[in-house]
Amino acid sequence: EALSALTVLGYNIDNIEHENFPFYNTADRKTSIDDNKKMLEFLDKIKPQHIFVCGDNDPKGTHKKCFNILKTTSLPNYVKKIWIYKGAWETWDNKYDLKFLHYNNH
Picture 1: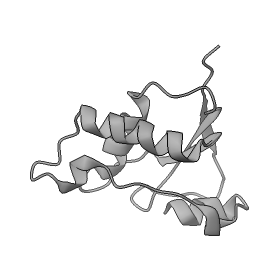
Picture 2: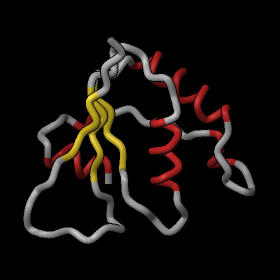
Picture 3: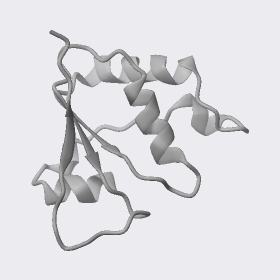
Picture 4: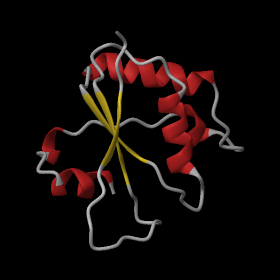
C-alpha cells in the first residue's frame, strides 16, 4: 500500500526504507516503549524529511499501531511532514484527499 501511494505521488520506490517493529514478533502484538526506541533508531539511520504512514483501520490493527507509535515518538527536527494515506481497507472515491501533519519542533 505504501509503495502504491508513493508511486502515485511520483516518488522513486527503489529508495524506500521500512522497518519491522518489535510488536510484530510478540504473541499479543501489543506495542511498547521498545517500538518507540526502534522508531527513533530507524529515523536516525535514514533521517527522512517526510514520513508516509497509513492512517486507516485494518483487520489486525497494524496500521493504527504503527501510526500511534509514530505519534507517540518525539520526532527529530529533520522530520518536516508526516503524510497520512488510505490503505486497502478503506473505501476510496474518485477524488484525491492527501493529508499531512506538519511537524515543527521550533
